[in-house]
Length: 329
Length: 248
Image (tube, rainbow over all chains, first blue to last red; front, side, top):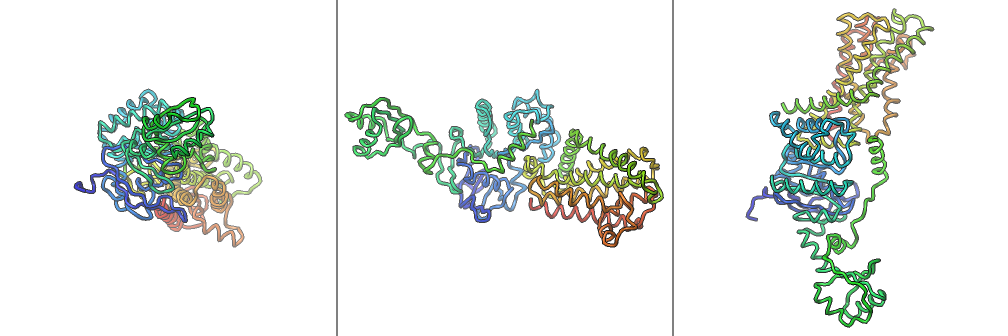
């Protein structure tokens, strides 16, 4: 505790947000040091978006405190907003304006100094590879182009902190990769702090630190490596001539409770040598054995007891998306 | 400084959106034609003169009021649209106060609505309404004040509505009654007492009456009363929009 409280880019203490009877965020605390990429991991409905709304002052916390760039979201919302660049989960560009016009409006409402506007907009357009399409209406853009435009727009006023809510949802793998390359480049160059939510586990691997949120509660926090280790050292997939018998043998001989899957029996061990020693003289014929380092997906499963659920959009969300899609055609 | 710029940016955006939406521009042009030509000629054929002029000329003030009512209400509720399609969030997280956002919306909506009202004025020769400088100035003043009040009313309605589904209800239960009971499409002097009460409670009535002053079409109330009610309506609606949008 030698550093002052403002050393962290984002500080959240005992954050609670209730909606009627529902507690969406239930006593969450974490801190994001400056210059880090911090990932907020969790299934839909875990409270990620609610936390983000509180951080960008769209929602008031029911209890607890949240500080962004040293400013309290409750008492200094304007200062907080000035320190943030935000990429929302849902599209928020104006599709009747061109790419350049969207950036221009952003400069005006975010108070980007008049003298640097033109240069910054041109630079941003070149950076996201949309210089050639700058004067086309966003209506004609693909989802990936819109997303890139939103990223560029969020950075236009040079905020020290970038908040990304599900930044790559709906993007093709190549666009996802370029987006990540750019975010890391920015972090190196500008010491930008990036706070993001995702339910893509492979994306969480890009983060310096990851926090896992489930049902509004923060259940684990650490580097991706630390979290993976909590799921065991090695993941073993074993297929045998008789998986059912092999499972019984594993349980009685070594006390291992393997998980039967379509690939075979899965379980965790602390090291390869230990495993090989155990399997010498195993009574069931082994057909295939593979070892893998646990993924964050495994860690998530180990920590929460369930997999990160795929999208469970409510019917209202589905309808809204349909309307949006219709508008785009 | 930055507040003025933010308001200008929001206004510019709304203007551009309006002008690029062909159906809105077309609607703004077609509505007065439909009313003034079809309604005016059709109904005028079997009507006596009203307020000392032919029915088509009488309808002129009503057509302007209608353009402002529909245009302003629509501009106000575009907030729902922006909320639904995300742009409102971009504005809400900008480092500008809520008051600026509401002022920007009301101002930009008023500008777009004034444009629509003025488009209707262009049809004056079609319905043989003479336009002098004084008449034009008078009409413009009414259009500006009425546009401000109606746009702010639209914003107030928008803060209470979560989705567009209620929009049909709004136009049926707010816009049409305000229009029918404004003295714009029929004279209001010989109505049953209960309707007269409604007509007098309707702020749009005073806007139409003020236009009749400018058009020399036998107005019913004094200029002072018309201006007072219209100004109070615009101020009250703007105040309400500011108060209610704060909770957005």
